Image (cartoon, rainbow, N blue to C red):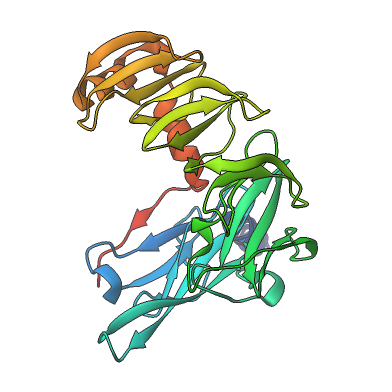
Length: 307
């Protein structure tokens, strides 16, 4: 009788352990989908495979054959871009053809597919928005692909979307290129022009200013479109804590400037710049800040052998 009771206890404990382990594995799978990383065979180029894995390294998505579909990393808000390719008989090579987005359940967001170069995803007031190229219009959609605004725009040939509009800045203004004058200005999400198109190039607003280009030289403007720094530099990077790197010649000769354009540190090579970023506490976080613009920095790329 005692032996029977012992065996029952052993079986009961074993079953409890198995149930516990199964619950843990199930929880890991569910949580893992929220932290899906991309496993890709980097060595095989576009002839290999890619798929998403959870935090345990278990595959949680279908396999993507890179020759035909190229998935990207999930961003902080749970979307990943997938680019589809087709074979060009003229060029005898695979060409990017369509773009779609997937959520963390690997469903196609909004069941929408776009021609390559005709859609961009941006962050606006903490929410995802999509800017798409339509017939004679720029369409701005919310994260569920509902229409926010449709802005009349005449495209020139097959120019891609990034050539005519850029991401909204911290003040919500979009840099855009006027189709008639080819000059850049700034507009609201509804298409209202706030700063008239008068620049040869324009970047997004950050820390109360935006970098603009005029006659191959760069300066900065305020939110009224007035110059803070006259266009005298060959390039100005995005400001970080009131400072930026600027190029003073066509060569890679850098200076550090403040928000008014005053030179703080001069006569720097590219390697000097990299050393400053790495070793100076005033620039701590700058590299991460630059990477954050890609919006996929929070996920780890896991490489997998071809076999």
